[in-house]
Length: 149
Image (cartoon, rainbow, N blue to C red):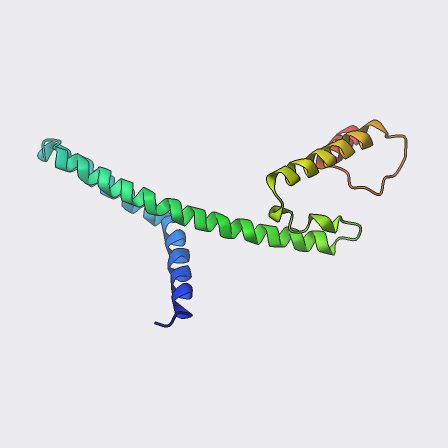
């Protein structure tokens, strides 16, 4: 297997693993194994070996699932960021500085959030028919819709 095929193989393996482990059949199988393990408890006199078997298996599966879930979450998050970047880039008048905002530091993101919160408060306080070219917050839109009803 060449080095170019290896990452694709690993990606396919993890994708299929995430897909299978999130299926109903995976739940049924794990539930069945748990019932079988519980049923053997009285026959094995609830021994340490009996307990360690389930402990070891469940710890190993949990350890592997953490990485699968993180990989899946990272991929979904990246896809969502790309979609949002496309929406921002395609909207006339949108603040294109928000494209790739996820690359900013946490302090920069908090400062931006405060700026938009201040803008939302300012727009809310000055509703005298003045139209602003700046963006309005989602909360203000919801409130305005509620006021129209």
